[in-house]
Length: 390
Picture 1 (cartoon, rainbow, N blue to C red):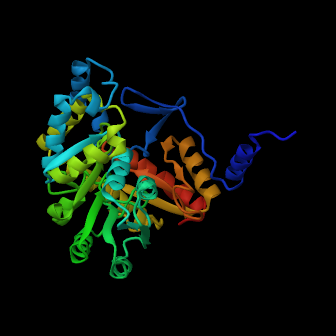
Picture 2: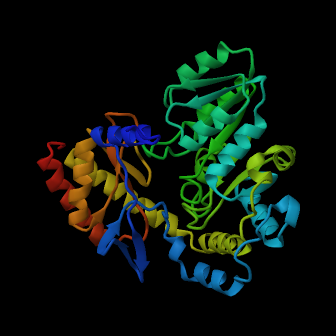
Picture 3: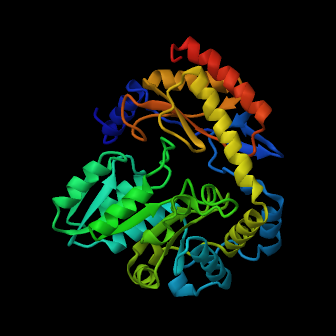
């Protein structure tokens, strides 16, 4: 007899047949070690790029300030905590903006900003490799049209812009989350000016990592176009090692978000202790400018090692380093063999990336020592040859 859930079983079976089925793995931190199940592993999947999620001063601030688990209501209903306001002022200055608005997550910040700023008179121009949160935001937006331009192809984007009579919004990531390459933000900002477009940047993976020495101002600062980005969207859970997301922009746009953004209006405020953690983390980075320099020495060394071995790592120049494999099953098996050797690098498969473009996505972070990365390179070398990838 047919079940009302047969279609769900059919979908799950299709995932298994295509080698795209996923399972949640149990993980935990014990001291300075990371465990998946009962196995101690080197964690090369974390977005905690600078290791601040385990920073002693940040953890101490949380412990000492924990008076309430959550405000349990939205800021418009329950009031505006003074430490949220303080963090927003810090983030606004950090992004060279007039104002900033905290969201519970970076995902919600993307949804909240893009859906609020767009109207039926707009066409949104979105990079083909933008994050799923941007894709979902575009789908929810009431824009007249969504136009996808080929990844980092500004000639293609300009042709689309020229052929459009609508009001225009351009949206891109700063460092792309699956490929690790950078948007050509200097050229994008010129196009935005030329075609009178609103420029929205999701800078989650370069914020507090890239930028001028010791300033950690992200891709806009790296390219010197801080004031040319209309809306900065970012995460507090990556380079900063904390939790939450934010939108930095003008007073005018912030005012619109407070009044229109459903993802801000209809959700509980971020807890105070998480705001204090972020404030502490920003202060720590400003006092420890050499972290950035040391991190990029490590990034360049690792990328050079992979290039010498002959892996296909695309155009990355960041801490996100994809080893592009292609076949979903090979990528999954490669990941499992690394795990046996104590290396945790997840296989990234469809729908996160296109079918046939499966990869191992390596996230370098400051917590892993060079001696351990040398071990990782040796293991990648042996397995890469086994699977005829190098």
